[in-house]
Image (cartoon, rainbow, N blue to C red; front, side, top):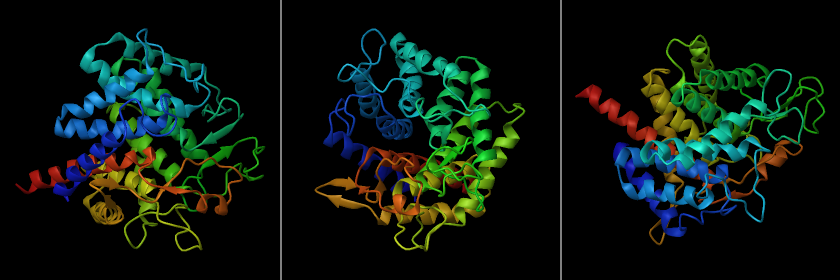
Length: 372
């Protein structure tokens, strides 16, 4: 698999670079959004593995298109999505590498702005962030990846352990309160049970959306990168990660991929979705490599990786990632809502394909070194 991983990772990076100038990538052009942050985070990993400077330059080009000379995020149509949702902080994760390599204080200024302001972001009574500042008490599983790795890395890099603790609190709070009967985590939770999608007994939404489950696991494994070995909650966080990954593996489809509604594989209308599949393969590979899981889960990595690759398409030299769910709110939380979401190709949510390729490459390198 190793020879395939970097080959396909480079190919996808080069496809998107060829399709879009760095300041015009996909939807919400010019805005500081997670769409761009997800894809470029994957590209950053390919850069780390290959050392090919064009990838770093592309990431920097995008960041410089949305951050001005004073270290302020540029408005679009006189406004940007500001700090009113966790989604529009995720791209801040790109600033650490840019600041480390350039020492440009603009990048540091934006990091401080995005992260320090989380101290005053609204939370429910358990201290878990609302997903949107204007929807009281609505916790979305997606939010862990959107903000908590930013907090944990900020805490680790700038020696502010309180931000690491804040990230841990988010992960643990979601795990404690968002589990359904399957052991997997539901997309939404409203402790007041007032949201239209909230169960009147549990406050949970009705379904396990694949990508939301993926966002949570990706956020969790990234927080662990910044968690000191002696941190009192480290073993608890590892246990949450491994418990959920073992549950996720039970729902892997026959072609190796996972489904849009994760725990309803055989129900009518459900379909294999590539962004969640990429996340699960990548997090599984990383968890094996770091010793959180044993090699008995390698078969799931291999099957999932090959399943995603078999779904790819080539078009005039471009690599096309199919079966990616468009951005998804909870709406009424119904099964029908999720299965009828639009499937799109080479959407920036598919940037997790690059993360998968990078983690498979790292795992395969480790296996080869152990054999040598």
